Image 1 (tube, rainbow, N blue to C red):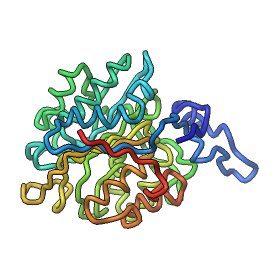
Image 2: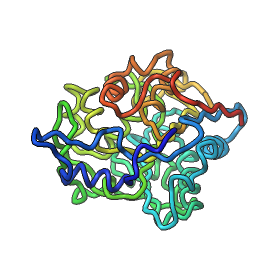
Image 3: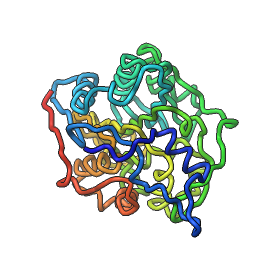
Image 4: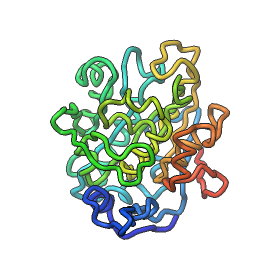
Length: 310
């Protein structure tokens, strides 16, 4: 994968938010593909192993991409965004990101020299504190040396989405836009509205008024993703929810995959995970539309993929 730009994630977002590059027609001249990527040998890494721990899977996938040191530099501020939309059941029900996966990512960031690693999500029910505790993610992250952040209403700010095709602005959690490194850690699961919850839809956890995305869900997720560009996406496919998502509640709907997928391309990460559900990226509106907008690719055959047995 080649380095597409010399600007950092923070600089890229500042340009978009400040409107620093604009033409006489008002079109943003900074291409969506100009977001900085780190040159790595492989475009996407897939680690799997029937008896491997989630920690070992995360470590193997990130090592294949050059190690966390390729993405996190000493002194960096890091935000990790798992899916903790609800925690009605234990993590074995695959309704939220596996706590060990989140802890493993946290530990790798700290090991790479991050000054601060915060983990956060905005649950759809209960309070942040309740969901963080019930899911086990709070304890796992704290033990790994990270911090759980309660997403405060005062930190949301309305920002322009210059390349949005259906929405032109939205209220977004400001720290996600300001951080040096933003790592997206979704879980692969069924969703009754979007078919699947994967990499791009997980970004809805950093906005307000999520229900207003539903009338044109796929395009609005893609529009949001054009602004919130993760440094890295690490997909939890240790256990995946095959039906009755997003909240689940029946272990018969859970399939054990013992897999972690990692890439800088959050569209490709989602497209690969979709194959576990006998679907392609083209079957998922947000992924297909994101690819059309130049946010990434759903053409897995075009990628250099490293498959790792752990």
